[in-house]
Amino acid sequence: MPPFIFLILFWFSVFQNSVHFLSANPPASSCSNGAPRISYPFRLNPQQPQQSKSCEVPSGFELFCEKNLTKIYFPSYGDDLVVKSISYPTKRINLLDPRNCVHHVFLNLDLSLTPFRYFYVLKDYTYLNCSTSLSRPFMEVPCMSGSDFHVYTVDPSLPLPASCVAVKTVAVPFEYSPYLADNSLGLGLTWDSPLL
Ligand SMILES: *[C@@H]1O[C@H](CO)[C@@H](O)[C@H](O)[C@H]1NC(C)=O
Ligand SMILES: *[C@@H]1O[C@H](CO)[C@@H](O)[C@H](O)[C@H]1NC(C)=O
Image 1 (tube, protein in one colour):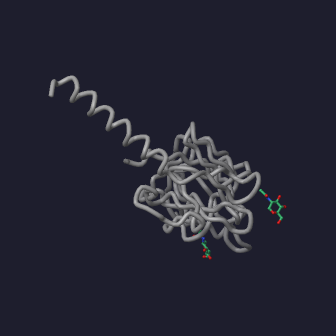
Image 2: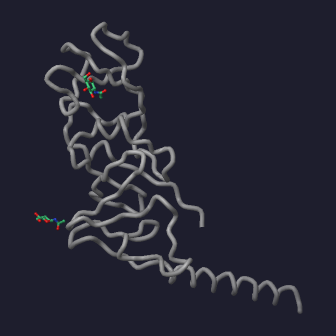
Image 3: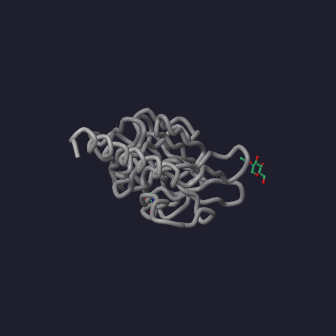
């Protein structure tokens, strides 16, 4: 067989395989009217059970419905987060914390074993747990504070006040302003393309 015919046959089979691959992807779906459209690499559980190997999604991309909400579960966080929106062209997923305490998520969510990263540039903050109330530049996190303790986020380079213990230093999206209560600003994540 002349080499160029072999080449044509080769490319034809590559093309056929990719068409087969695309048509084998699960169809788009959603949890309700107006809820985020769920398509590859995400998959809705259990409405789209794994029917065949070609329908398999890379782990970490499973979403599920609770009532009409779309949710995602990160084992490291141990609680559900609500999926507010997904943009496939920009690979951005916006989450909401049902507790309405985005700092609780920043402090506890470990994205390192997931396909996700924060969408925004990160900056290290130290969370302090203090027995007394502090003034600026210490910024209190009301949703994590109690009547007899106060949680603050501070620049890690600041000296530790005597009434405080450092809980943890974590990388928090820099654009997130601690003054803002809308947690959708902080919980924008992006994902790495799964290897096919
Ligand atoms: C979900 O249901 C609640 C009431 O059960 C309703 O207020 C809300 O608008 C619904 N959301 C969507 C996205 O359908
Ligand atoms: C802060 O300290 C209080 C009391 O010691 C404790 O109940 C609370 O869980 C602590 N919070 C954090 C984020 O470490």
